[in-house]
Image 1 (tube, rainbow, N blue to C red):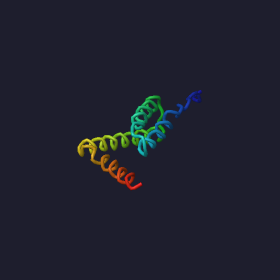
Image 2: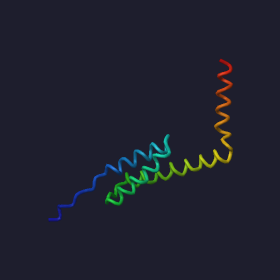
Image 3: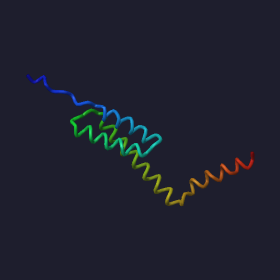
Image 4: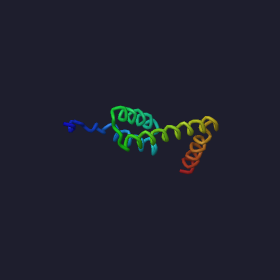
Length: 94
């Protein structure tokens, strides 16, 4: 009689893990979506490690994104202007 328990689907947990990895590697705003999906999966009763890992990776991606924005604002975009000047020098040589 106790066999009626259904394991919650882990689609949101898997999506949060994938988006957490993507957010960490290349697209930080995906980290925000990873956090939201991980929380939804956890609230739905999913206790898999995928939801927890997606949540943690999402937080790391957002924190690194925020640090990058702060550094960029603090340097006045000097990092980006240096890249642009280098590209201009290379284009001038061609």
